[in-house]
Image 1 (tube, rainbow, N blue to C red):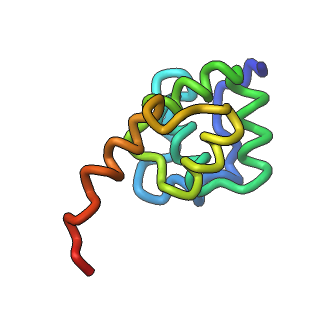
Image 2: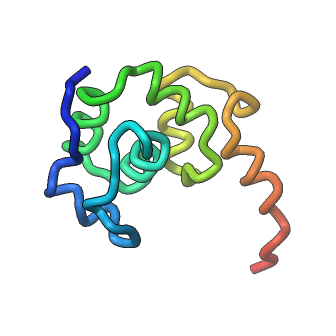
Image 3: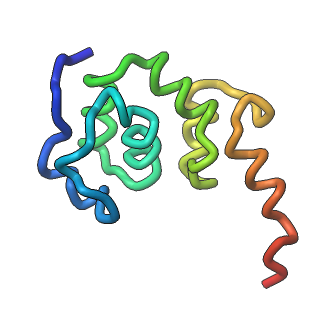
Length: 101
């Protein structure tokens, strides 16, 4: 784990909807990890694993309701998790049938 205090500027494009400069890597840890797991590239993933412990990332994967389906499946396999260990799958099940198109 690295003792960086800021997210690299090159990742700003992944945080299009918020004030990038206001992000704090500890206070907003779950948001940052979820966003980069959903939309980030290989550099983002390397940065995540050098900044946060594997356990911290796994905890976010288990508890985030905001992980998208494809990244959720990937990280489920990576961390060897069951669907019922991941909150995002609860959300997916609730949304089934909500949109009939």
